[in-house]
Image 1 (cartoon, each protein chain N blue to C red):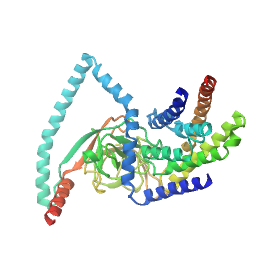
Image 2 (image 1 turned 90 degrees about the vertical axis):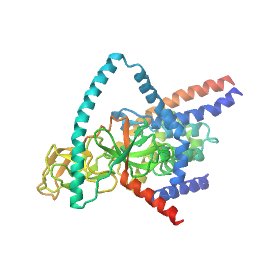
Image 3 (image 1 turned 135 degrees about the vertical axis):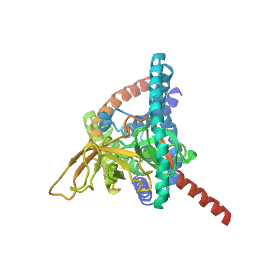
Length: 279
Length: 162
């Protein structure tokens, strides 16, 4: 029994070391992910059923109210879009004059968050899209309000994502008002972000909007991330203490958007065609 | 015959249920106190039927938990393996000691389980709060006591029927 235990324990440790150091275990993980997929579906089922039941049982009055509200929202959104089209054209012209690269369009896909709780100490969640939909590790996730997180692991039918508030997550942001660049780090609390690298003399104040700066290459440029809640100058230290609140509804979302950058996609296609030409 | 089938099905069902409960969403305030369903159920069965639920089951369940929770592959497997191994090592003694002592033993095994998880997280540089990590031991003990009474009564009934 002792020998069996030692062998199994060594196997577990070896597995962990390999999993931590390299990414050779992608395949194993994918196979196991398919094996536990029924469990995920079964756990999510009551919530999905409750949602579809509440959809089909909505009374007409609520539907009409919703419809009115959505119509008004759409009118507003359309109004904003009209201005945006003109601004985009102007922006493209100015960028051309400056000789800087154009900002590309994005393709999005709606993914549903599975009601499956992962490790309670981490802000992570499963979405119902995987390799079959072209999801890749490092893909950005957005919702209607702003940046949600990024994909960290992809299985055939599901993907695991890390929210921007996870204690292991950091994303490059910039203050929308003046372009000040910094990094927003997760806290483990799902409505707080920390900006640990802002100097005491930096021009940042409560209420500032932080947008993604696109520097890390993961999140597309210019999407809202958080509002600054509190700036505390610490005279003895080199950095101030800045707390921000994410704009996306991280704890209430049921649906998120997976984003493909059109530029990276076309370059991938180009690479593929070039390879096939060479062959 | 029916009992034979039952003896196979119930453990499997309870282990599956434990996996599902481990992944089921709970309200935010309760997250820190989520009981460790899998080790509790697994320890129970490894005490009741050690010849059938041993270290291989522990590793299998652990790997399933690892994939389900997105942990390092082998992390939960190692923690479960250690708990089940010690449980079986002392099994002849555990079976005859009084219930209070048995529960104390299980609490210590659960603490060890949490410690292995915590330790591996530390080595792998994953940020984990120190205080909240130990809360599940409390709630798991409650679940253990419940499981013990419910399942033990069921077993006695099943035995009586033979």
